[in-house]
Amino acid sequence: VNYWAPVDQYIGGIEHAILHLLYSRFFTKVLRDEKLLDFDEPFQNLLTQGMVIKDGAKMSKSKGNVVSPEEIIQKYGADTARLFILFAAPVERDLEWSDQGVEGAFRFLNRVWRIIAHFEEAIQEGVDDYDRSTLTAEEKALRRTLHQTIKKVTEDVGERFMFNTAISAVMELVNAFYAFQDKTVHPGLVRELSFALVKMLAPFAPHIAEELWSCMAGKGSVHDARWPKYDSAAIVEDEVEIVLQINGKVRDKLTVPAAMKPQEMEKAALAQPKVQELTAGKTIVKVICVPKRLVNIVVK
Image 1 (cartoon, one colour):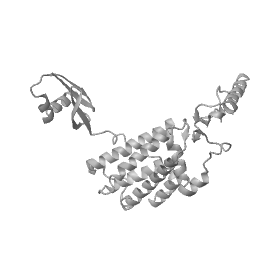
Image 2 (cartoon, rainbow, N blue to C red):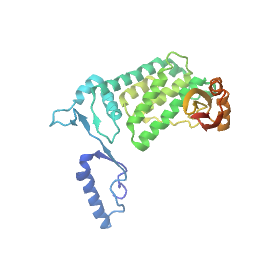
Image 3 (cartoon, rainbow, N blue to C red):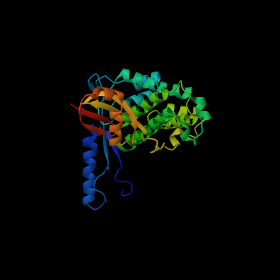
Image 4 (cartoon, rainbow, N blue to C red):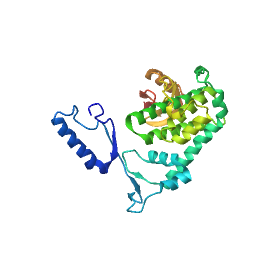
């Protein structure tokens, strides 16, 4: 018992709070007091999942408001049902069933399929160890989005059980990928992004991920593949867009190096033609610089 317990992670509904949780704690405390156990609590972590709500009431057979899983699977596939349930609400909150939400999950999975199919030739052509220094500014931005997504999904799934926000991040990555469908993209980047995307999708939509993995000639099963790791250097932005304000009102925007110091930001802002035009004949009282965000010029 001391080897197998306490349980690392308990996942259950709120209706189990007494029959499972309270009684298991009671027995654990008694056995501990009798010196039969070396631990004090039966579970190290608790995750209480929400219920599924339909038409304003808890989904149950007695109320007759149950959605048939067989019908959803037959029409959309198991992956769609799974993805919608995980995306529709945080895992600890109640989930409001939505037919439109199911349709949306189905459209997203089709979108993933189309973008992988679109870049299939580049995926096969690309190599894993390609020269990142040859990427264009646009391609570097896409790769930055990829590695920011890997970081977020890894943390949301592995540390916070925030499946809905992890899926949202994957959706944003797919949208960013789609913006390049009519452009020439480095095959190495296409391959890196596609393989990482399918790996991140696998826990949520295992069947389509396995099929795409096979289409991309991935080795073995996607579910045995190593989880992608983010490149900390890739997620650092080289340039950022800052807001130029005059007396708190936005007047212009300016792209500057991300590492630019406040004094340099002030100099760059005051050199802008629009700022010079709007401050002409006025006294600059002070200049407030917030790195990576804004420059506010106070005049009178």
